[in-house]
Amino acid sequence: MSRQLIAAGNWKMNTNYSEGIALAEQISKHSTDPKGLVILAPPFTSLQGVNEVIKDNNHVKLAAQNCHVKEKGAYTGEISIDMLIAVGVEYVIIGHSERREHNKESNELLAKKVDLVLSKGLIPIFCCGESLEIREAGTHIDFVANQLKESLFHLSSSDFAKLVIAYEPIWAIGTGVTASPEQAQDMHQSIRKLLADQYDEAIANGTSILYGGSVKPANAKEIFSKADVDGGLVGGASLKAGDFGDIIDSF
Ligand code: PEP
Image 1: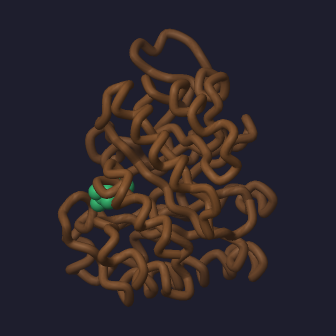
Image 2: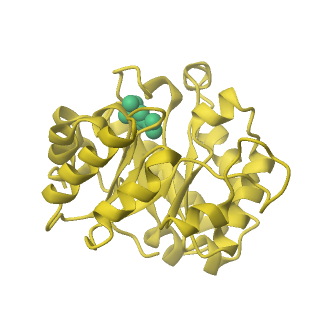
Image 3: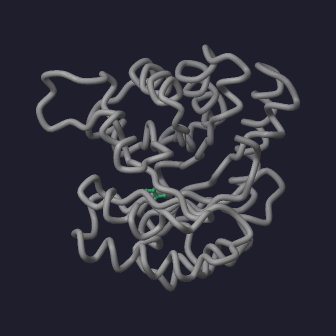
């Protein structure tokens, strides 16, 4: 996928079926000519319904919040990539910090999930980001570099070129505390430099790198205006059609 502006909404474990459909309808209606791509990641139970709502809108795509690392089998309660494909999913969020924390997802496991998603022709939205402790220790750049190295740098250039990256400092997720536009830019620039060193300039300049962490209408414009920020992965503010619409309009 070539670099583009993206506003992705991660609904997490929020919205029941009818709430999800109503939200998708409002966002789709709003997104008739956005400056970037809009991606919605509803809970699994709403994927099919949301797909029905957005399938004729080329500007809005469907994402899953996770998938299992195995293709099928005795994994009670899990969702396979083929099940997601069957309901119209094109993107999969991989490595969200909440899954890293609550489900103990390691860089090694995430590398396998990325491989699976790519092998099926879907696009991973790969999340990375440091805790407050790491930020305060001043090792955040190295920490994020290591997440990318261990989960992504085994990929060929042609596979890497399909990915979307989301930098989400954990201390800014759901806390109301946003990284400053300069902090976001610093990290995004260093990720891009790392991609140039590992791959080449074309990969570095062609990869969409989203910022996530308390993005809201009041701060989206300034964050998105930074040279290396290609949009946002949005949690809380994506649950209100008006707020998410304003964020989409911030490009
Ligand atoms: C997220 O869940 O990816 C996120 C960034 O959440 P919030 O916007 O609520 O901080």
